[in-house]
Length: 249
Image (cartoon, rainbow, N blue to C red; front, side):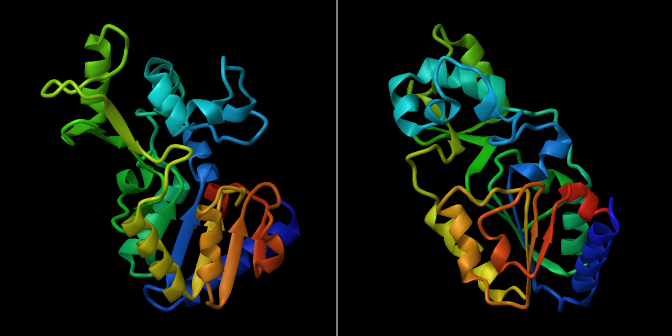
């Protein structure tokens, strides 16, 4: 790490130390979980760079799910589930900062549940979670373990509710689907109260999630991402580094 990067990270850590209790908010994307072995979407090794019968962004759309559920679940279970992944340094440090009273909320675009696994309590999952599933017929909840069991017993690989026969859908926001209003409102309220907003591991290319930082009016906006983002010019500090490295303190 060069001297400028070291100085930037030290500045960030000083801001964290000086932040009033409950006035730090973290907003993260796929880059937060890559250090746990979960691939992101837009990097050279990400999902979008892989070869599939259809473009990955099409295969995780609501229209594709409705029209081709068997192909959807083939892709989803093969590429979107990482149930053995463990929290990394960034997840653990954020949970520690929350427990210390510094961090008020984690807002995440990820669906892996690793923030909660690390111990974070106040997490706004903008795009849902692979750990939750529900029957589209009767609304019954279903764990991911049970979803996989239902899929294994299905003739066509589509998990169906044992009670009503409806398709069991992961509680994740697919392309063409809106974000959950309550989750979105909570995230906006948290950002509005923040003095320090840390945006990390996201290209800030996916809307409406990327537009959330427009609600920030606090003192310090920090962007941590290995590549430039469209919002870098608005940040008080940009760190081109791995998220876990920045939160290793």
